[in-house]
Length: 253
Ligand SMILES: C[S@@+](CC[C@H](N)C(=O)[O-])C[C@H]1O[C@@H](n2cnc3c(N)ncnc32)[C@H](O)[C@@H]1O
Image (cartoon, rainbow, N blue to C red):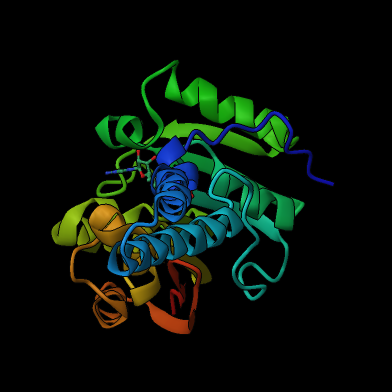
């Protein structure tokens, strides 16, 4: 059983609670407006704003970005065992997701641990130490190692992993970077093995909730990712969506 009490993924406060900044003042204004008998148009506008912020807050809390996620597809690493690479592991959310769901697997948590890490998780403490703390808190550190690596030029031998996971990371390196990262993933994965690629989905819900704040990957949609993964030598075995997420289960033939 995964214990999550001392895990701190460190995603910024505004991702989980930012909508309160709009919700609470708009509720207060609605109360004041009712007391002072403000015009109907002003009350209606405030009501719409409060409704949006309330709905968005509720949906975002249910995403639980600072809690460990569930594996999006049970078809990933069905054998349950093997050596997995996490590309862009960050503070360990995706690594813990895999290690918790696949207790026989081991994992290399790789990340560049540079500016992008700081912009997501802040710069308090060593990134590697923070990742290790979370792996320990989740009780999976014995099956994990941490390695600094640029996803565009992975420091691993060809065909050295039984599976790859990457969550919300390939959408941070631009189009060329993502192409390089997919080619590198294909190179270091063993033939017949799977890559679970999870990306931020720029769908209507994400735009409704966050406006432009989560516009990762610009205009790239599912078609771009599928075509680029095919160019890199992958077959798409499965694809789907989850709240604010798009995923592909890719296989190296
Ligand atoms: C949004 S975080 C995702 C972290 C984690 N996978 C998760 O699910 O919470 C994106 C991560 O990608 C990493 N990253 C960005 N550019 C990278 C690169 N060129 N090579 C390796 N990692 C990179 C960042 O350091 C950051 O930790």
